[in-house]
Image (tube, rainbow, N blue to C red; front, side, top):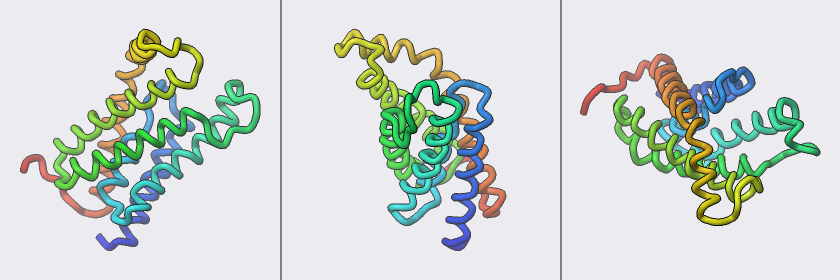
Length: 183
């Protein structure tokens, strides 16, 4: 697929996935990992790989933080500590995707979604521990933060697999590219 066409379709699919955040009915069932991996697999320019997924996620975060979650933000919020850690995790997931998705086999796609989801869990909960004030700033507080996040991990991983499968499957349809099931 031509580069401009690829950029267009990847951007459109990322925007569709990000808009789904506004209709999220299952806690932590989000497109973050899927959009990061799709960008890693298809966007060739280094800055696009990071910019498109993070910018799309940031825009939805601004809207959600100032409407749906406004009770948690006493004034207009452009960037929250949650977003900073989500963006850091997205950068790391993109780097993982660049390595794991050189060969776009479904096994690699799903493995990168799981690895990315687990990495996102570690990074985002680190941010909660550091900045939420909900946990003491010691080892026991960090462990308590991760333990408290475990019930949300299942939905997050299911969302990671769903969105990654949806986005890569849609990309396969629009590009007529077939992903292999094996080497």
